[in-house]
Image 1 (cartoon, rainbow over the protein chains, first blue to last red):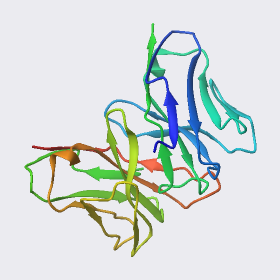
Image 2: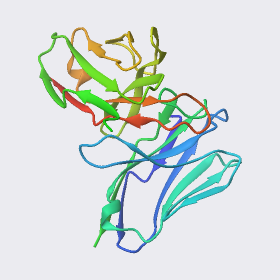
Image 3: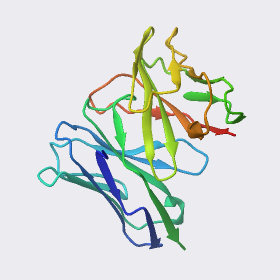
Length: 114
Length: 114
């Protein structure tokens, strides 16, 4: 049973464009939704996170949009740059975050073409 | 600022061999966990610990053992390696749970079982 569904699996965006990655979840007990960025040969690193009491969170060029009724959330990368090329994972936690409670999506391989 | 340190970075084992993957953190985090990452599968929780002397199973615990004798260290043991355990293993730690607690990941151990 896949509790967090992520799409697309891969994405190619032109430099300066908007990258959009979507996730959907089933478990209404989830209360923390982080996005992780992973470069080849490295571990995942927290990019941005949101709680379900807000519908949007923005940090620089990265924005999470959250739709509680639809049980969906998405990552938007504005003005995408070649340095943003990486694998992105959405995740969800039912215990407000922490190292032990994360359920991950399957990942999106993002390529930003110069 | 070492953060979460995993050793070794790469390992090749023969079927049936045993080994220990090491994980150490220097951030005085109480919570530590092990995830495995397989192509197209995202990260899945193997075992976790909420403090020294306390461990519990995650989503995919079979074939793995853990112990937590100190706050800093959380080794993962493979008692009899199988080809299905070929994966990239990540150790993570966090200060606690809740409050949007960030999980910090190590650089990973790439394990191949032949």
